[in-house]
Length: 280
Image 1 (cartoon, rainbow, N blue to C red):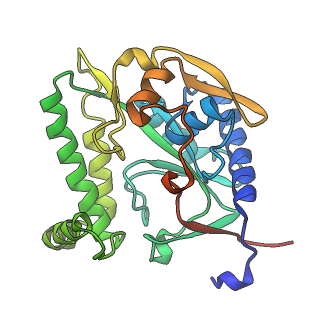
Image 2: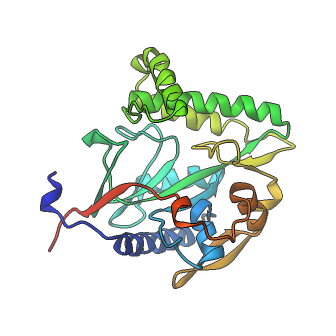
């Protein structure tokens, strides 16, 4: 699809569209009795800005594993809405280890997606909340295993480009080179499905902590289970949406002094361009 034939969305329009998608998702979860909550940058936005972080351009959600898999099964029979469809690890052409609810009315062009089969619209990122070990060393091994298969999938999907502007990125290039033989033997969809199976593998574990294993944020995505024992509704734009009652502990672990607004040069922003698929 030629982007010059489509109208590009501004950041304000991206946020407005994603807020509309969030409302549709919230209504679907309420209708089916599914538990979810804001997480990551969206939770930070709710607490610090009562809406989007001004420079942010996505929505992050989290669901307990049982609700996460129930959503997958429900959405295969009944889409979230007429324009919001769930993509799950292992689906054809889907290069991620976690679920996304994808908008059919937009298309996104981002740096790490180069194949048309992988290209989709604006999304709600939906991460599973899985049981993890209480022993830190066991979680290190678990996360290393998860990250290995994520990298295999990303290499197979062509999602990692060679870069030369730092030692860290040059080391990443070396890892890519070493993983190519594995990626050549394992389709990236199967690698991402394996990520999901590993993440879901301790559903009866006790004692336990909770974390995001579908696409872990460095080594920080593990929390005492008390953080997610109950949920509270917090303001987000014009509505209220569920958030973990232990959001202070969650945000402190991820961001430190999370109420401090970073200087312009410190702000993390995604780099993609979004377009409407069809104009009336």
